[in-house]
Amino acid sequence: MARTVRDAKLESRTARARLKARPEPYWRAVEQGAHLGYYKGPRGGTWVARYFLGKGYAKTRLGTADDTLDPDGAEVLGFAEAQAKAQAWFAAQARQAAGLEPVPTGPYTVADALRDYLAAYKAGLTKGKGRSPAATTAAINGLILPTLGEKQAARLTTDALNKWLAGLAANPARARNRKGAALRYRKVNPKDPEANRRRQATANRVLTVLKAALNHAWRVGKLPSDDAWRRVKPFHHVEQPVVRYLTEDECRRLANGCPADFRPMVLAALLTGCRYGELVALRVADFNPDSGTLAVRTSKSGKARHVFLTEEGQEFFKTAVAGRNGADLLLPRPDGSAWGKNHQQRPLAEACKRAKIAPAVSFHVLRHTHGSTLAMKGVPLPVIAKQLGHADTRMTERHYAHLAPSYVADTIRANFPKLGIVKPSRVVAINRK
Image 1 (cartoon, one colour):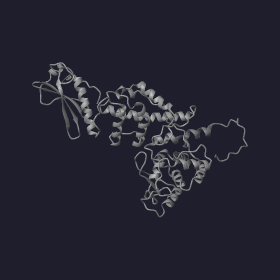
Image 2 (cartoon, rainbow, N blue to C red):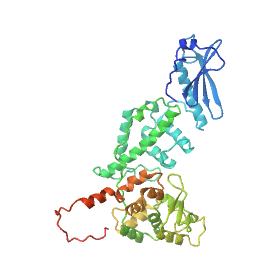
Image 3 (spheres, rainbow, N blue to C red):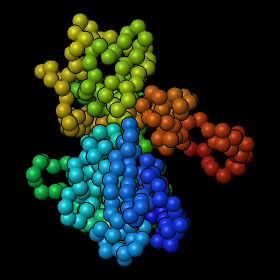
Image 4 (cartoon, helix red, strand yellow):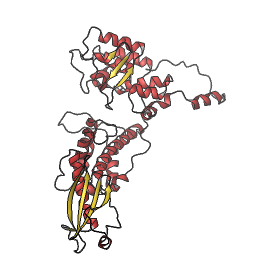
């Protein structure tokens, strides 16, 4: 609502003098549902405003029009001053309608914008770019607030934001740490292009959160312009990851190397492609032996889905649910409790060591293994997207399109002649360790 509108009938006192006095104000739309009005009565003109609240308008008097007196910035207002005062009132009405707290006194900071955005996001009043509230909060607290939180949002510059983005990409990833302890960072090789790509991709995702918060503040009238951050561009060509996946032989070795209490989690991940958090939340009743599916009710996107199981997957889950109550955890720890955050890291690292898989893989690689295997077997990408719970095929294409059977690759291999420049080798390949 912060943009300034023009109106030839209301902008000047000369133009307003030609208007007829009438009971209904002359309205000028500033935004949809928000209007600035000029009421011309027998004793002079008055500025008013109205804001649509769904079942009617809220109205307020802004001040006296400068028809005969010069503007004083308080009671006597020109067209531009009346519009600015109306916009501030519109913003207050929008905050009240959204259930947000009143605007705090003092300068409006980046921290204020982030707080308002999180409140609106959790209330479902704005979109969160597909990120969970927890992930958004973590990005804000760890990577935005420490550097930008105290800065006045209206005074942000493109140059300052570009420097912040570059610094974010230059810093190594933070290592997991105990609450309250000093920050620790992972050791990275500055010459590793994949490490650089990951840091730049992370910086892009954090920039998206910051822009979403600032755009929200701008839309509700708390900031006068979006020009500063609109000019900040993310790093290019960094969203294409190098996908690590396990071969069938590595899958078998990893399963055999797992501790007995952790093996069901690994098998479930390989057979379903589910995320760790999705597997942890599964209940016995989520497995349907009649349809051969697994209901994932808690997902990263917030949307439920059904995972389709192979015969091997169905056999695994039939054994896992045999004789158990439907409300029980499907994949509990030995004592019956749920696996917690990061509980998978140590047993998986030990399993990789026993299976001689180096470097050790993360739990998410098991999900990539499921998707990669389907792609290499020629399963259409939309089917893989549905199986993994992607909102559309863009993420699926980014990770697995290069593994799918390719018309280009098949055509080249079928038509390029054998040049006879490579000598036959007696070396016989063995299974990769």
